[in-house]
Amino acid sequence: MSPAEKDIDRPLGLTTGGPRSARRRVSLTPATIATALAAVAIIAASSAIAFREKPFRRPPVVAVVTPEMNVPLELEATAKPAGTSAAKLDATADSPSIIHVQPPDPSRAGVVVIRDPSAIGQDLRVAHLADKALIEQSETGPLPIRAADGRRPVDVYARPWSGARGARVAIVIGGLGLSQTGTQEAIAKLPPEVTLAFAPQGNSIGRWMQESRRSGHEIIMQLPLEPFDYPNVNPGRNTLTVAASEAENLKNLRWTLSRTTNYTGVMNYMGARFAADPAALQPVMAELGERGLLYLDDGSSARSTAPELALKNGVPFAIGDAAIDQVRDRGAILKKLDELEGIARAKGVAIGTGSAFDVTVDAVSSWVNEAKRRGIEIVPVSAVVTDPERS
Image (cartoon, rainbow, N blue to C red; front, top):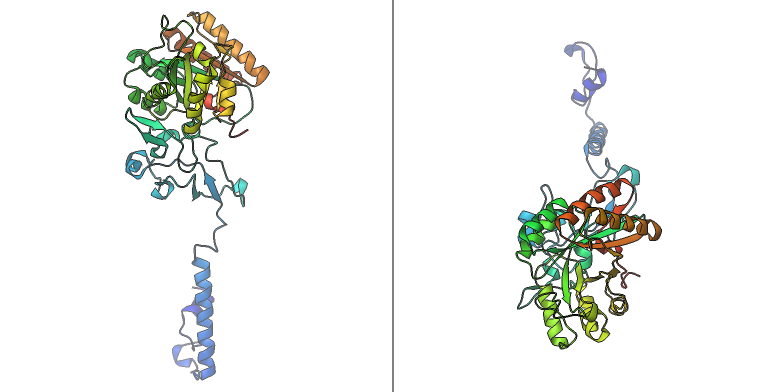
């Protein structure tokens, strides 16, 4: 034991020296006692500072605002990832985002980062769970609505992407839900970046929606609209027509919208005649704008009034560049996909649409993997819309 350690351990008032009998007795005067007490106080304070964990021994913590999803409390047990505290789950619809503290990133020390809650989309770990703040109950089922805090389904249910401005291709494969086997194979085989479109006449759409979202796909609903040769060519049950009243068309629209949840918007299924009639299409666009949904025009009709009406009603809008499987041949489909790549490299963005035929699913699956190696980013349709509320 060192002399210093002995001095600390030795009772105050004793000095070092030889044998115990030879030590001198020190007179304990009031001044000596005061000095000793002051020394004890200094040692105690120094020890407290030395061993106190925070705030003295840790660097400042950076507060980061991240885009968290509002998850209802009753879903917390199943939706919350392991190790996630309950404080990170927002049980109300009044707050657009959640603020939580993360360990500081040494490369960004002292920086406060604030992200737009709608810029990234829904956490894929809970993407199959509907946000109750975005649901309105109706006679036919749940309808999508804007949340009280302004969040829209097109934002909340969007698949995350890089945000880079390189060459981007969005591919939308429709007809999901019509064939149980075909739907299952499409969900399993298609890369998660591919957007899936569900036919409202399909079966078990809620179950397939959940499986699609768990697999990482963004989804939209197909909206049956009147073609020019209707009813000889019939898009199916509850088709919106030019001759129908506004109330009847809105009723049919809401039936389609109520078939499932967790989708970002709708795309036309046929509908060349309906989309060319602004009086018929206007109420539909107004409804989509109020509910915060996107509209994808497949680009099959040059007479479509959808672009102008979407802008007027605040609807995020996109128009397809090519139908990739009008000829159901693998070589022809791959050629169309290569054309989309050329458009994307020239314009920055390209959109292709197709159906869930076996040959289409196989061709798209192989082409996507090759295109990504060539530097093409495959993005969800929500990433390529023109959004009047953000322009």
